[in-house]
Length: 546
Image (cartoon, rainbow, N blue to C red):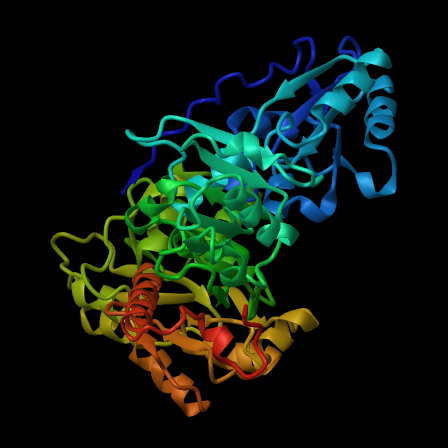
């Protein structure tokens, strides 16, 4: 085992004694005047927020925004004590001006880019008139962002021009857009698709001209329909707003360039029954496949009823009582780390000890703590897998034969039995207790039982039992994915149909297996000529676009 190197201080970290330092997390206002940053947050995907926009949100005292149009992940960049003002509650210029004149750093958030079909001109002029200093942080515009996510380039070697049309106010003179083969990007025409198509055809565009419409662009609800001007209105009936129309030969590129809507789990709502800390890497992986993870804890981790066991174990770590320490979960790492903090210790106390981790997530938690494990399973990431690679006790090589296992109160004895067989003396210490979590909110429970989720991932037998106990049994259209044979057995005992099982017991492999299942399902629907439907859309009464 070797302690991980300490991370250097973050670039630009504030000197507490320097001008403009923070007090209790809030920027000093002794010298800085109040300002307004007019910031674009992109067309929908929170990942399209620019670095500059994220930095402004992190520094903001007040954010003025249309809450209904703002993804929660965008506001997650703000400090916990930020003031959020909804434009639904008042004039945005007055809200921003009042806060700025009180010496606060204000961010006025717009969807897309503030200067494209947004209020930059009007609100910026009003701030100028009011004498409020402001700056502009451009964002990814829907004009380019939505076609990019739809797999439609606005220009190609044969088409070098595109024109943007704001049709939201009606009364467009389509004659001026019919004389060239420029790509047209039409915004604000969701309720007037037929009028747009008829206007362009009447102005001289052939009715066979390729046209596409994308609704809810850059979000996991995105939908794109490719058609022609002649059929666009009928083919897009029922599509949701906001939507954008793209007209021109460049639409034909979509067959080759569609990358977003073709992801294996695109738009799938996936239930991850783990705590937010445990589910972080799994949820990130699922998002990479296009899914929308919903983290629902099924257990609550609590301290041991009495602390004496852990106190003695930590003392033994420091005094050299153990040869090995085995971590069988990230919760065990967290429990030991919290004890170390309480005693003023850090990873250096592990010097001279050998450390084992049951799998990749546990090993990552140890590295974050500052400890590189000496032993991890080479195959199956479980207690059984760790037991398979555990060395026998050798009195000539091992000065001490004692092994510490800080674990849950309900841990199994499989590992202890194997280590004992190999000549080791094990001390099994309760580092934390697991109890069933409180039931999730009613909408989550209803989605579980009513088929609102496309898939649920079970990472252990206990997650099966606890999820059903606190929220009910998943609907029969929901895809059930399990981490291994024992979890599959438990799921079947509870009357669930197991659709997916990981080829190795790791959460990463489980996500991969679900993505492979989703890709095969999608390919089968396409080959059969069926509409591409998510599992949740197969239940009776599910909304379908007509």
